[in-house]
Amino acid sequence: MQDNYIRFFDTTLRDGEQSPGASLTSNEKLEIARGLARLGVDVIEAGFPAASPDDLEGVRRIAVEVGNASTGQPPIICGLARAVKSDIDAAWDAVRHASRPRIHTFLATSSIHMRHKLRMDPEEVVERVHEMVSYARSLCDDVEFSPEDAGRSEPEFLYLVLGEAIKAGATTLNIPDTVGYTTPDEFGKLIAGIIANTPGIENTVVSVHCHDDLGMATANTLAGIQAGARQVEVTVNGIGERAGNTSLEEIAMALYTRRKVYGCATGIDTTQITRISRTVSNYTGMSVQPNKAIVGANAFAHEAGIHQDGMLKNETTYEIMRPETVGLNRSRLVLGKHSGRHALKVRLAELGYDLGKDDLAYTFQRFKELADKKKTITDADLEALIEDQMYQAHEIYRLDGLQVACGTIGLPTATVRLLGPDDDLLVQASIGTGPVDAVYKAIDAIVGVPNTLLEFHVHAVTEGIDAIGEVTVRLQPENGSSPQRTSPQSGQAHARTYGGYGADTDIIVAGEAYLAALNKLLVASGRFGLAETPTEIAG
Ligand code: KIV
Ligand code: ZN
Image 1 (cartoon, rainbow, N blue to C red):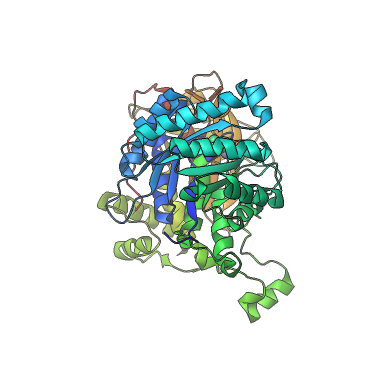
Image 2 (spheres, rainbow, N blue to C red):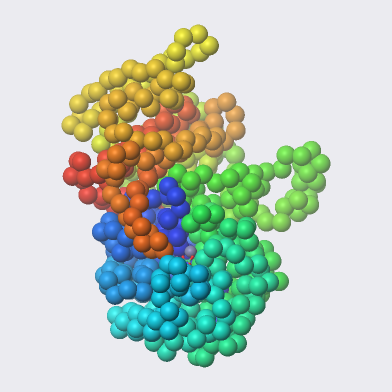
């Protein structure tokens, strides 16, 4: 491998999924992992298998299905483990099915963490690192070790611990700025010091893992690369614990756009960035802020008259990256009412969706319905349509009909008709503070699962009065009936939340998002005895 090759280690499914409210079903994780493989990441950290049996199963499915791709080299599939035997066993149990498995184990090395969290002496930490890395290495040839809270650890102690990990067989040494405390200058120096002073480090890959508490994660990661790190740990849209992790798209595009400065190569296909960003946002229910670099809705929008004038004269006046480079397709008119099934199939294939016969037939039917309401169907419309299909979990309850009355006089009222688990027709009317509230109250009255709506987000995919609207919601069950999972850092168990997504020209019908989230909650609660099965819709 070239000396200037930067490995992308994606932890969207592990650190990203630890974001408050971002929990994903195992089908969604699998779909994201497929997208990450298409994007060209080198390593997928698929989860923390010791968190719960569900988490172990989710990682195992990714190891089996994404870690053994028949075309090209599949990504390494990695599982996180605390430096304890049972975690390492769980991680190995999950990742061993991949053709290139990795175990990632970690132990804190800052005095704050050793004293208050671990209650261990530095000597005990060194000993445990040696013991657990050796144990992981006895199972797997590829072992990554992270000294947690390295950003606030004594450099001399880090050299010692990392040297011990290398002796025990670690192949990648990851340096986390766990609490996002360091500055780029400090972090670059920390990495340079580690490379210069750790015995045996030349035979390992040095990695960086930064959190964004002070908004410096991207800058710190780039400083780490300049100091010699050759693996970056990142998440799509920068999701992750607290303020999040370094965002994959920012590093990929910084290395690409400023390649003369960094002189580094990557395996990332940047044209997949927009698609994976949308997938992650829709599945997690975590919307991307409009001004987010690279993937925000405004990242390539030019509003000010003076900017528009410059853009019309020459796009490079205000655009340092082409939207096409990140897969943002600006083509306007794609298909319309008279387009046939073949044209739809070809366009979808160009957009990266390879549909089987049945899925295509269903999509074509929905496309025709949409074309009746909307004259021109753009790529963004098609993507919203496909994603809406992909993101529906098991449909225990299905929306069969909906009527809303609202205005300045009288109370907003909704009548909802659902098809229940046994295809029974269930009808309910409710009033609410607004039309959406009325719809959700009516759905709640039928489904009967007490929950708190944590987030409700609407945005228009395209312009115009007939634009497709996307709705993402996040909810949490109220009575603790949802499965619990353990956090790797704190060891605490917490309740899951559930995201739902819907897209339609009618924003109320897009409230199907709510039903999608409720369906996920019901599947997870085991009330309907359903096991998740893989969705095969995406190419
Ligand atoms: O931020 C952190 O320290 C981590 C470790 C588990 C690598 O996520
Ligand atoms: Zn982290």
